[in-house]
Amino acid sequence: MKNINKHISSTLKALRRERGWSLDRTAEETGVSKAMLGQIEREESSPTIATLWKIASGFHTSFSSFIEDIHRDFDKPVYRSGKTRNLHPSDKNIRVMPLFPYDEQLNMEIFVIELLPGCEHLSPPHKPGVIEHVVVTEGKMEILVNGKWLLLSKGEGLRFNANQPHGYRNTTAEISCFHDIIHYPRSGA
Image 1 (cartoon, helix red, strand yellow):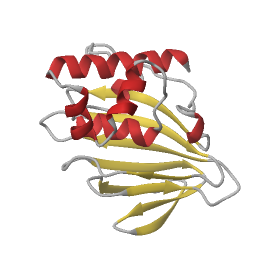
Image 2 (cartoon, rainbow, N blue to C red; image 1 turned 120 degrees about the horizontal axis):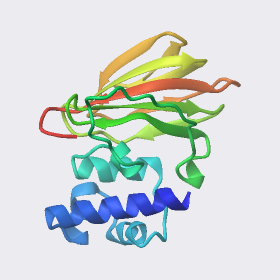
Image 3 (spheres, rainbow, N blue to C red; image 1 turned 90 degrees about the vertical axis):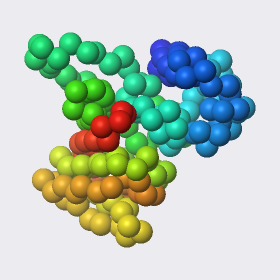
């Protein structure tokens, strides 16, 4: 967990430096408090998934850039495998792994996400133009879109505008697994 906190911290610092943003400006743009941002930069606090999404959205950058380095060699095939993991202790019922981190040629990133039984994860709105494609690979889950929970089963998918509050939940006794493909508008992640 320490390495991911270091990566999140260095990514946040680099983005602020690149844009010339103070902590006050960053708090204003992301909706995350100045105190929390400072704690994240000093590796004193690990952000929840929801907080990390707010930060990424405020910077108009990808969520996956905070989790791992993004490779830019698009001429070679890329094989990816890995295990999902908890990113924050309070996110104990949701596990995430970037299957393919943000791709600047395609303006997208692909995640494998597991929802443990009883998990409900609410996500703040992303910037206008962000589209999510959810494809269930195991179990059943519900997705909150347009204020309604919609049930999806294995093999089913849903595409929606992510510029609204949305969420994912698993009300079953089994783990639900899905691929979340996030497409960003051309202006950047």
